[in-house]
Amino acid sequence: MAELKFTKQELRQQQIRLTQLQRYLPTLQLRKALLQAEVLAARAQCDMIRASCQQQWDKLSRSAPLITLDPTIRLVDAARIATVSRGSENIAGVEVPTVKDVTFLFFDYDLYDTPPWLDNLIDEIRAFRTIDIKASIAEERIAILTRELKQVYIRVNLFEKVLIPRCLKNIKAIKIFLGDLQLAAVSQAKIAKMKILSKKVVEVAQ
Image 1 (cartoon, rainbow, N blue to C red):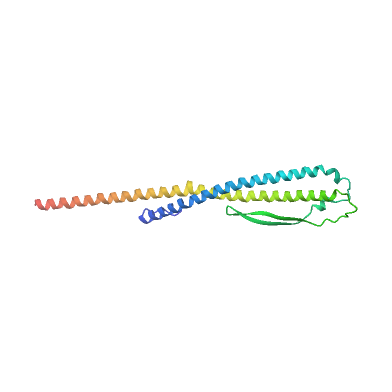
Image 2: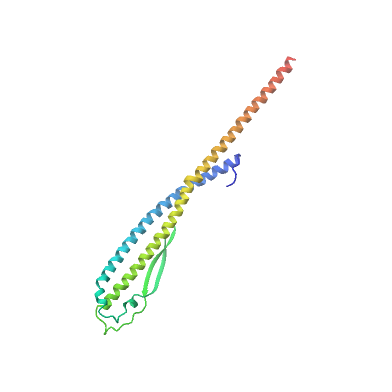
C-alpha cells in the first residue's frame, strides 16, 4: 500500500475514491443478494431432480426380477450413453451449464425373440440415466454459483470492512493534519504581527 500523503491533493483523491467505493458497493450487495437467491433456487431444483432420480431408481428396482429372467440380455449396453448435449445460461451474470439432450448408443436386440416387457424396461433404464445426468449438471450449477457467491461475498466484506473504513480514516487523518497546519500558520501569523506591533511601539517610544 502506498504511503499516505498529508496534502490537499491526497485528500481530494481519497474523497474521490470513497465516493467510487460507496457508489459501487450497492451494486455488489445487490449481486450478492441475487446470487444467494439463485443458489437457494438451484439447490431446490437439484433436490427435486434427485428425488425424481430416486423415484426412477425405485421403479427400476421393482423391475429387477424381470432382468434375471433372461441372462442373455445385456441391459447394461442399453444404458450406454452416446452423447450429452450441453448448453449454458446466464444466471446473475454467471454462465452455468444446462442439459439439452442425452442420446444413447444403439442397442440391438431381436424384437421377436425377446420378452414384451423389454422395451419398457429399456426406456426406464435410459430415463434413470438421463435424470442422473441432469442431477449431476444441477450439482455443477450449484458449485459454480456458490463459488461466485463466495467471491462476491469476499468483495463486499472487503468494501464494507476494509476499503471504505480505511478511506474514511485517511480522510479524517489528513483533515486533522491540514487543520493543525492551518492553526499553526494562524498562530505564527499572530505572533509575527505581535512582534511587528511591539517593534513599532518601541520605535515610537524612542
